[in-house]
Length: 246
Length: 184
Image (cartoon, rainbow over all chains, first blue to last red; front, side, top):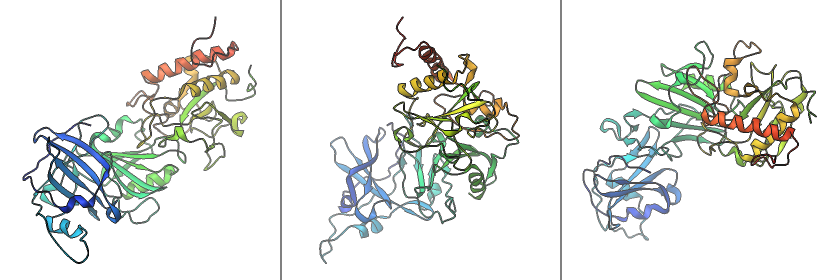
């Protein structure tokens, strides 16, 4: 796994936030050469699991220099403010006690692709509720293929974002993690598999055969490339309809 | 040798992959049942087990629009590129051996263009289907993704050539386990 840039504006301080992370569940890890730290993403523990993750930067001595919690909401991914994060920390009994104040102002995140330099993930334009990968906004589906509300993303691993589960699963990749230029995938110009996704031309491409394998929806919006995969078993006609609804 | 010689579509063999994560680990699914109108003629599991489907001797297949009138459709369990996860680089040696076995028993010619990837079907379209399906199948690890060439890539050509070589072995009744050269 390779590193990208990690814009940290202020480093310090260890807090009880560490209790919220499941240190046995490392989602991703990369060195930040610029700041000479190791950035590790941990799953959150207990009932917070699947709701977000914790990013921890540690120095060469293994000492934590910064921590930040990121939680999913209906608009995407958001970094919690220090007070919000502190409220999540379990307190023993009725006694509340703060050991230190978290004062990290910002953390950039990297998701690593398949053996390539990872994209830079950051809050978009200063907004805490937007989410971008290499400057490309996440396209959150309104519904799942079943018609159920898409809700919040349930995973963000390997640089991909997912909604739903099982046969009603939608997985999105942005940038170099996607399948590539839709015009290179062999879909004829007049094919029903040519679709428009939010006004952008794209294609619907079975990875295997319909009803057996996954089906991909591939498009470009300006310089941003996207791929959405629908779960195995989806039919091509329904996938085409779903693509238009994104 | 050709005990599948009554197959009307044995002139060509079209290779499919399952196209879902970790499909190579799946030894339970059988895709022979015309589910949603689709059925392969043969299915080959990662360990080389051959599942012969009822469609193998039908006049028209149900595995690839545009090629169902001409080709036997053989499903290799695995995802050879393009899946969200659980991809494998290529079919297993056991799958290659079994694919070659099926080709030999169908009596399909050893000419190289008789073994085609599903991806090629929308370009080849021998059955003149007005809208053959464009697909990633059997995966970008074996096939080209380009505007003009939707056929075997270099790794796919190597795979095809190994199949044709092993087919020859089977025709010679070699018991070479398909992992190497036939004994002279």
